[in-house]
Amino acid sequence: MNKNNILKKYVLMEFLESFFFGLAFFCVLFLISEFFFRMTDFISHKAPFLFILKYLAALFPLWIKDSLPVAVMVGVVFSLNRLSRDNEITAIKSCGINLHKIFMPVFYTGVLLVLFGILLNNELVPRGYSKTIAMREYELYRNPGEDPNIQHRAIVYHSQDGRNFSIEAFNPKTGVIYNVTIDKFSSRYSLIEQLKAKQMNYTSGKWVLKSVIERKYAQEGRELISETKLYEKVLSIPELPGDFIPAKKDIELLTTGELKEEITRLKNASQPTIKQVVAYHLRFSYPFSSLVVMLLGIPLALGLNGKYAKFRGAGYIMVISFFYWTLLSLGRVLGETKLLPPVLGAWLCNIVFLVIGVFLFWKISK
Image 1 (cartoon, rainbow, N blue to C red):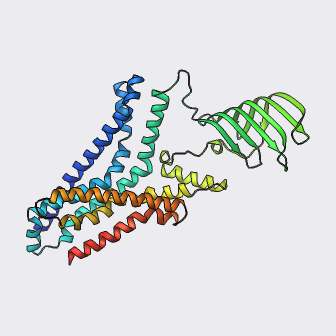
Image 2: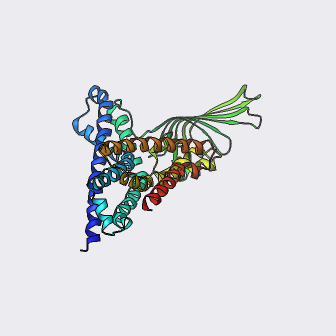
Image 3: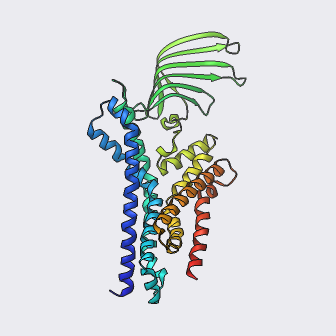
C-alpha cells in the first residue's frame, strides 16, 4: 500500500470517527426529547417497556435523516480541524501530495450518504413515522372495541357525476363504507335524489348499497315525492375504493411512490398539488445536503487554527445549520407560494450553499 492510500484511509477514518460520534449524539438528543415529550402518555396509559422500545425504534430513520447533514458537518470540521491543528495537513502539503486526492474517499462517502438519505426519505422514514402514529392511536390511546382498520372518518367526497357523498367511516382494507348519504343535485343545484345506506360495499367491480332508503324530491328539493326502503341497490359510479381515501394532511406519512400517486390523483381531480410537488422534490434535494455541507465544511475546517479552533468549529456548525434550515424553509415557502418553480424552491438551499462551497474550495486550493 503506497503512502497516498495510507493517507486516504487515515483521513477517511478520522472523518468517520467524528461523523458517527455526531450522528449518535444528535440521535440520542432526539430520543431523549421524544421520550420525555411522550412520558406523560406512556405513564397514564401504562405502556409496556417493550411498546416504548418499539415506538422509539420506529422513529430512528427520521432522526437519522434529520441528523445526517449536521453529523457530516461535525465529521468534516472536527476531523480536519484536528489534522490541521496537529500540522498534519501542512506535512501532507510539504510532501507535494494533492489534498484533493486525499479527500476523495471522504467525497465518495458523501455520495453514499446521499444515496442512503434518499432511501431513508423515500421509504423508511414515512413507514416508520406512520407506524408510530398507528401505535399511538390504536395501541396506546385505543378505545375498547374500536376497529383499527377504520382509518378514515367523516369523509366528504364529490364524485365525477356530481353526487355528494357524506361518509361516516371507511375501511380501506375491506372496501366497506359505513353510514353513507349520497345526494344528487339538478343543474340548478337543487336536491333531486338522496340515498342513505348503512353499508356500501365494493364487490366484483361494482358498488352495492345495503339497507337503503331512497328519497326523490321535487319543487327544487322542497317536496318529498317518494321514499323507498331497499335491502340493497347497485350504484353505477366510476369511482374505485381508493378514490374515497382523503388526501393525507401530513405529507410525511407518504412514501415517495405514494406521494407521486397522490399528486396524480389530485391533478385528475383538478385539485391544487403545489405543496405535494414541492415535498416530492425535497425528498431528493434534502439528502444531497450531506454532500453540499461537506464541500462547504472542508475549506472552513482547513482555515481553522489557533487556540480556540475547536470552539470556532462548533460555532461554524451551529451558524451553518441555522442558515441552512432557514434557507431550506424559505425555498419551500417560495415554491409553495409559486414565487419560484417547485423544483427551484426545493433545491434553492443546496444551490446557494454549493456555490459558496465551490468558491471557498477554489479559494483555499490556490
